Amino acid sequence: MNRSEIVEEVTKRITTKNLLKHILAVEAVMRRLANHFGEDEERWGAAGLLHDIDYEDTKNDPHVHSIKSGEIASELGFDEEIVDAVKAHNESHGFPRDTKMAKALYSADPLTGIIVASALISPRKKLSGIGTEFIVNRMGEKSFARGANRDTIRACSELGLTVTEFISLGLEAMQGISEELGL
Image 1 (cartoon, rainbow, N blue to C red):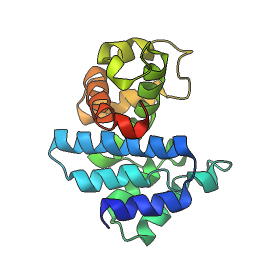
Image 2 (cartoon, one colour):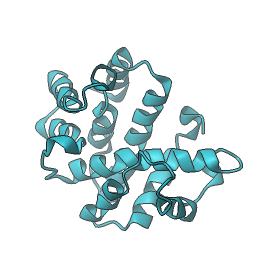
Image 3 (cartoon, helix red, strand yellow):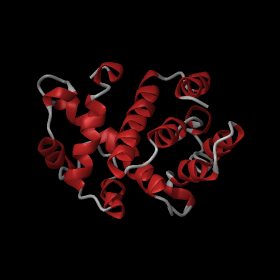
């Protein structure tokens, strides 16, 4: 499947505007990470697009979330690496994250939330109005963007990245699609 076909499948199942923006943000971060590591941007982007494809159906049953996303990805013909990364991004299942792709998706998911929250508290309320240091400083504030699990973001160390490097790559990726994100 190409990107537009995947987006079509996602928009059939996801109608919440902010959730769609989150999915696009995770895709952008995954593509940027793939580029950084010399991996296939299309495949990593697909994992980002698919990771929450089940969320509107499973939001009230988190123990099913990501298992169903993985099943959908498999039904759509995606290979085991993508399916496993999608399933493993929800840590409640305890699925192993054995590949770079799976490790990246796991950490990228909450990173997008802290980047968006940082942009929204900046004076311009735009991604272009914030920098890496601003986000790093927000990471230290426990009450800020509580839903963005800091330990999950810090797991970027499993990719050989510091938190600062990871945030910088994620911010750059999201700034690249800031119009789509409305930020």
